[in-house]
Image (cartoon, rainbow, N blue to C red):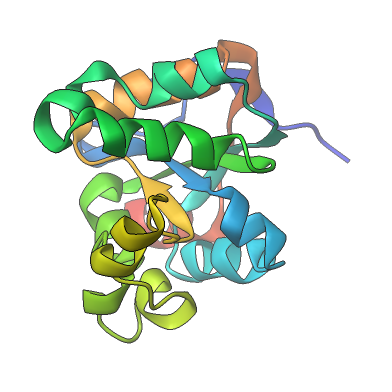
Length: 186
């Protein structure tokens, strides 16, 4: 069996033309401890693969507090409050996180649509959060815990670049062709 070619976090070595490379993005997705504990990892990854996104990196990680704080930066404290950041960091310490990097045409926006609203209560049916979670901000605030919303996806290109680099080393990301590539780019 032929091994997948190892590459850097960019898609420059993917064999695609320059024009096609411009539309291809990589994004980070995390299945949070509540999703791992519920045993729905395969169901979630399958949704992305069924939609044509390419899995280019995958691992399970037990986060320590320092790493969780590197992911959930001080920017969250500024925008949402220090108590929200504390809740998010604590949630990452509850169990392992499955981290994966997806690649595809406009992957950041497409993956965010598939994930659904941050608050599961308002996430539409058909989205990951809408189908697998239902908790509200009010309930989480009452319990002083992070919203159990199963999954994280990079919010924009800058976050995707930062987060992929944080979670994956260059040798942990791979480039290969899938049947989806052949249908999209040929």
